[in-house]
Image 1 (cartoon, helix red, strand yellow):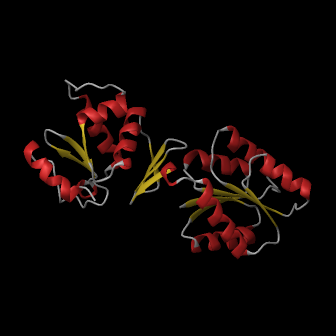
Image 2: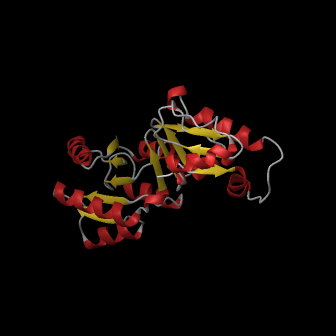
Image 3: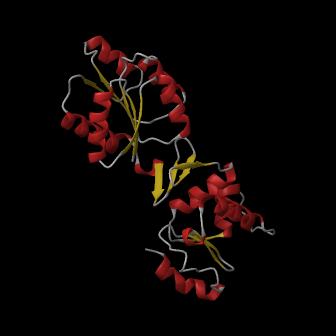
Length: 246
């Protein structure tokens, strides 16, 4: 998991970051709304912790900007502004929860667990080892670095990551990626797979996409690159299903 913390009090941000690591989350910390917007554009976050009272920028304006982008990232406000009007305003602008300072770190952790359990369906983020796909923003990350995929490359990767270890034939790929129920007569799928490989595989030992000759492809995120299925003949590929499918 990866969280964005927008908090200009260094001591509070340090305490929150430490508590989030206990939840297994990696944190980016920013002290101004403009810096946080830049981070948001470059990364895919699972949750935002927001202080609306900032010396540089306006936390409520940041919140409105995030929601205007149609982002559904869960946002919890932590603020010294604790009147009923402040809470109503923050929640009305799109925050998912509001916690007044001073607060218990344990309570913050419990509220965040609840938000992640109820507001982020698991299918919105697909993640295998060093590869992460965020469907909300249509972003892909390899080793934490954003990969610049074209639209068809993204659709193909989404298909593979949605069906790990399953052999996907070319007709299925045509329907899912091109919305065409035909058998391809050119190597258009092979070319697209080749382009995708170049963007998500860093080395021979980092192979994730394998060719099943005469059938299609299989996405194997846990492969070490040595257990290749690319030389399987069509009649042998059926025997491979039991070992490739969980």
